[in-house]
Length: 377
Image 1: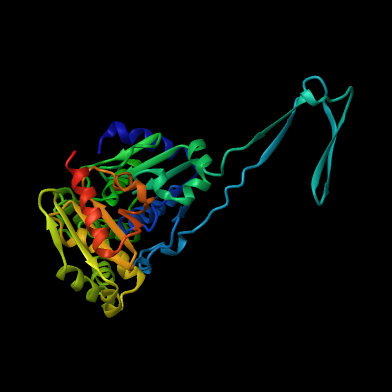
Image 2: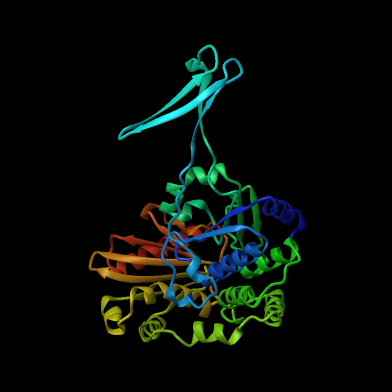
C-alpha cells in the first residue's frame, strides 16, 4: 500500500463524521467482510456509519458480525434554503403559514422593505461527509442506485477501495492496490494506519472471511505471501476461523453441488485466451433442482476452482430463443464494455446479460466475441 495514496484518505476520514459505505450489486463475501469490518472500526472512532447494498445480499453471509445493519435504501433528501440579505433591512419578525399546496414565509422588517433582489435560494449538501465504495470498479456498475444518486457522487468526496485490475480509478481518492488479493487486505492495512484502536474479534472475523473467500481458502493463484501473513495476524487477533469455514464451505446446497457436477462435465477451454466455459440446458437446471442463488454461484465456483484461467463464462438456457450469460475475468479488461451491445448488468465480479439466441448459437457468438477482443490485447 502506497503511503502517498493512504495519507489523504486518512485525513479525509479523520475529518468526517457521517460516512456512507456503498457495496457493489450482489456483493461477494470480500466486499461484505471489508465493509462490515471498516464500519465497526470507524464506529469505534465515533463515526456514524451507513452501509448500503443496491441489491439483496446472500443469506450465506448472515453469520458475519453486523450483517443485519446493511440497508437496501437510504433517504437523500437535501434541505432547501432561502437566504435573505439583511445588510440594508433587518428582520423584526419571522413567521410562516402552511397550506395543502404551498408554504408561505413572512418577514416583517424593522424599517424599510425587502425586495426580491434580497432573496436567493440554494440546497444544502447531502447528509454524508464522505462516500466509500468497496469492490466497485466503476460507479455505473452500481446500476439503478447510481442513476438515482448521481448528484451524491458528484457532490460528496468519494473514496474508492478495490483490488481489481479493471477498476477505473473514478474517485477523488483511489486506493486501488493490484498487489492485494482482496479488499479486506487493503482495509486491514488502512485500519492499522488510521488510528491506534484495537481490532476486536468481530472485525478480525469479517476481514478473515473476505480474505478466505477471495483466495478460495488460500488455494487460488492470486494468493500472496501477504495474504497468509495477514490471515495469521487476524487469527491472532481472535478471528473465528472455524466459524467461517463451517459457514462457507460446509453448507453448500445440494442443488449447487448437482449443478456444479453438470457444469464440470461440459467444461471446455481455449488455452490461447485462457478461457474456460460451460453450458447448462433447461434439463440440467431442472434435474439439479438448483435455485436462482445456486445458478449465480456457478461463475464464482469457476473462478475459485479453475484458477489457471483468466476468462470464465457460464451460459444457461432460458428457452429455445434466449440464453443468459454469466461472465467474469481476472484480466485487466472490461467485459461490460466488450458486451455493451447486450446491455449487461454488472453484479460484483460477474457481468450478466441475456442474448436473443438459443444455447448453441449463444455459445458460438460469445466465443467469437471473446476471441476477437482478447486477440487485441
